[in-house]
Image (tube, rainbow, N blue to C red; front, side, top):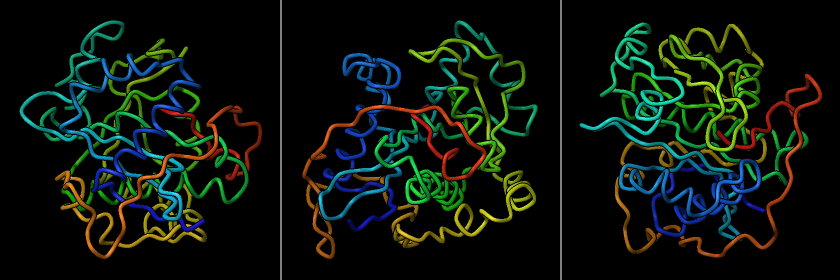
Length: 267
């Protein structure tokens, strides 16, 4: 198994990311393909995927969907402005120095349950967190928003990532999750707080130093994910094979060891 962290760029890479997203969200939250299409379909043209890809099989072990900013709000901001939160979005973001038109949305975070346990499994989550952070910095994004299942929020906080509830946000049921909280991530804050909170994870989270996953700066360049070409670049074959095994099961964290905390089901 040859694993690579990347911003999915060609159709096969994007399809692999969507497959793991769909499988995890169906199992963890009961989100059917119809629900996923209704919720994420309107944002497909603005979606970019950070993914850990097995280059031998073409399957994704984990993926995060990012929805980029433009003249209309990202999904999280649309959702938190309505029920059950009814947050004043501009005020909530203004409290941390951000504006609705500058933030990107981490609309989903999914890790195949087969790759959550143990130190090797923890690397998939760490790689995705690094990829989201690094790609956002490369693209000049000042902040990120999301609605996190509270179990996932606990995982990310243990990893030292300063996701914090948006001003005025409470934990509420959301899209099959019994308890989720709207959160915000300020990149300048992360630059200070991550080294202080988890210096042991700085090589992985900040620099992408991982034992079993290849991280190349070019794979997180701001030009990746911006187009959907019809063919793979000549120096890398397009991964197209579907996952060969079923995606099932999720276990809640039961230990304070990093390798067991780094196992989010999805956001």
